Amino acid sequence: MILLVAVTGRDCSQLIARLQALLPEVDVQLWSECSNYEAVEFVLAWNAPADLWPKLVNLKAVSSFGAGVDSIDLSAIAAHVPVVRIVDDNLANDMAEYVLTHVLAHKLRLKEYYLKQSACTWKPKRAYAHQHVGILGFGELGKAAAMKLVANGFKVSAWSNSEKQHPEVSCYHTQQGLNEMLPLVDYLVCLLPLSQHTAGIINEALLTMLPPHAVVINVARGKHVIDTDLISALDSNKIRAATLDVFTEEPLDKDHPYWSHDKITLTPHCAALSDINSVVEQISANVKRLVYGEELINKVDRTKGY
Image 1 (spheres, one colour):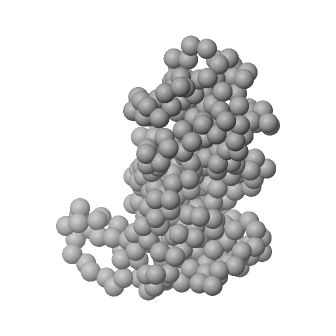
Image 2: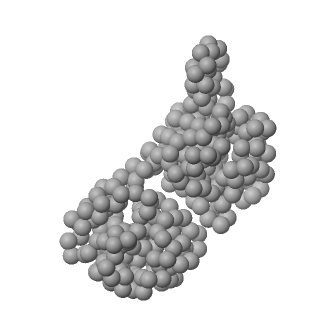
Image 3: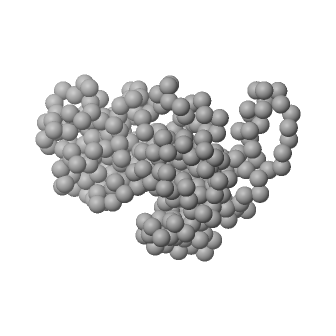
């Protein structure tokens, strides 16, 4: 049996070595060095080459390298092949801290002061009074962010695809619910899973419904945002600022206007990074489950895409 590591854009040598140590009976190989595609039964994938999937005629399971599965072309994988994802308890806390940090940074005008520092300008201002955070997506990460914000004195609302209830968060669902929530929030945080229904959700129509002092924080996926619509909203003062941690193409092209926009804070997809220890433990556990004919953990509902 071959466990194929098809994770592009990074050095996989340490990952492969750790997996091989935990799975001595399994042949762990890098996709570009695969010796026998017919022997591949399990694939660990992140932006795997499109021409790889048709070669894997005996594929039995696929795992995402991260918490999401949007990096995997599910349509290229047979319906009977289970797809799983990584669930890292530390990710939720890391994400919550990132969201709180950037909400506070915008509230306290830190970006404004960084720019003034470069211009040697001394001009203090009071922090913004805005305290209402709206979260798009109220799953594990959304709830963790909400609780961190509530604990620090923020009012929190959340919108999700299905109806949810929470004692400390005002919950909305359906398009009507989204339309009701958007004009009320000062900071809009996107933590939605990426699907055909959520791609491009942060567009001109949505941005127009926010108050002009609102800030957009996207820590989900780059494809949630229509880049040109966001830049237009910032340039026309329809919203105040944005923090972006994820992008349609990564690394972000050096010529992209996001880099130089004075109303955008940009970070390199670092809000919540999977711990390699958690990754290798979960992958090895699922490989062993596959070998023994047991149900895999953290399976994805293909109809929802998460």
